[in-house]
Image (cartoon, rainbow, N blue to C red; front, side, top):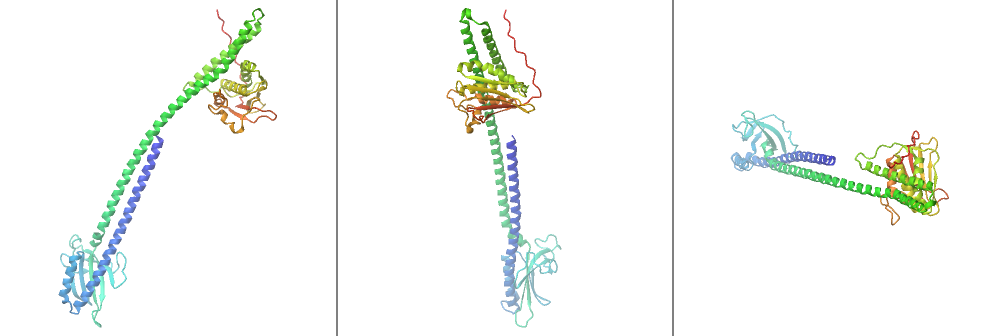
Length: 469
């Protein structure tokens, strides 16, 4: 399940980032909506202040019905603009007209910001400012708290030489809130929709991750079953392949023993004893192969390397393969001098050597020799064994492929000999490779190398045949 947890973590991180991004966008768009609403209210207030200033100039000049007509204009504007909180017309120290939208009709109180606009300053004849409308109103709360208004002031000169008239129109601050309400509501709706979409996508991704995890688990179980079946097939093929060598040697020895027995009085007892001893050694080899494969089939695998003498293993394997080389008309030359202690299992080394000798027998040309040599340089860290034949050799491009499972160039071959040999050598801590042929010699040159052991192990006693009553 590590993959599922990692994928779920990434999906959760992406969902959190998306939610944080949506929250940031909501805040930014809300701020932009408030600024746009303030701008719209300021533009309306500027326009209304200019219109009222023109009508106030007419009223001061006695036109348009005077101040009663101006009051009617203000009343009609209050009907279309409910947030128009106050209208005042002053000339010097005198107040010519005053109408306020408070509950008690209290006048405007100075303070709270002068003519500094809360959302910027407009260029032109209209000045923006802030005041507190005393006594409270619709949004002022308790009496005496006051209502904040935004003022728009216009100064005009009704007649040449006359004192200037100043008109001040006050808009309740709630006008900005009303203006931005639609935009903020739309933004909130979009935010909730986006959040719901992210949550649905997150849930869908989690479901997909769970499904993929279950599918991967099923595939892993199927892969393990296939590996077990492949291992069982490889084990069976390995048993058949490894048993062909000793069975062939046993068959040849039995045929020679039969021929020797057919001579009657000319039978040579020493030859009969030699053939019987070789047959017994072959049967012992078959028994060891059986035990090795039974050990390999156990859950704990093969035991740890116990070490051995590579030269002794080479001589034993050469003696076992001698009947087959003799029947094929080929000569097996063994060059194994003193002890060559190596850190690896003797059973695996013998198994690999037999497969190398069989490979040389199959690809070599009679009566050319097959050389089996062991190298154990004094003071060296490794011991090596080489098998050289006089066959067509191994192309450079195929020197690694020949160790693959089921790779063979012979129609009747199984492609398991060199694969099983490398498997046995690598299990013992060594390596098996196809080396470059020596100068002046053709054919294939297979080299297996093991780490050198500290000292040569004591030779194990040869098994004695059981006496029959």
